[in-house]
Image (cartoon, rainbow, N blue to C red; front, side, top):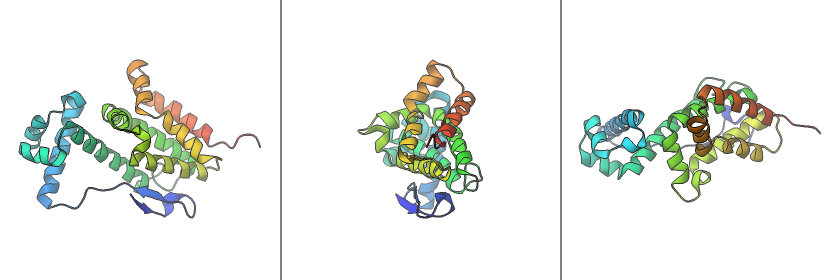
Length: 212
C-alpha cells in the first residue's frame, strides 16, 4: 500500500494508506474489466454470491468466457474483485469526498459518518465481505483493507481527543465484522438504518475520555 499525508490525517505526522488501484492496462482491457464487474454487480444484486456464474457473467458483460477466466480465474477471484471495487469507492469518498465522511468535519462527526457508510457498504455486499473475512488464513485482520479502516478510525478518535485509540478502533471494527452484521440483519432482522443509529452512538461513546 502507498501512503499519503494531508488534511485527512487530522494531525501532523499521521498518514493513511492508499488502497492499491488496478495495475495500468490497455484501454480495451480496462473497458472489458469494467463491463465484467458491472455485469457481476447486477447478477450479484439479483442472486447473491451463489448465483455468480462465470459463463453468465461473461454473457451479460458481452465479452468472451476466456476474458473473464483469464482476468479473474474463478468465482472466488471475481467475488474478491467485485468487493475490492466497491471498497475502493468507499475509500475514495473517505479520502476526498465531502464532509462529514470526507475531510473537513470534526473527528467525532466523521467517525459517525464512517460507521453509517461502512454498515451500508458491508450489508450491501454481506456475502462477499463474509467470504473475504472468513475464507483465508488470518481472516479479516490479515486483509490490507482492514489496516486502512483501523488507521482511519484511530485518526478520527485521536482528533476527537480519545485515549488508547488503537484498542478503541479495534473494538469498534469488531462489532462491524461481517458475522456480527449478518446476525443482526439476517437473524435479528434489524435494519441498516437502525444499526447505523445504534452503532453511531457507540462510536461517539468511544470518543469520550472517561474519568481522569
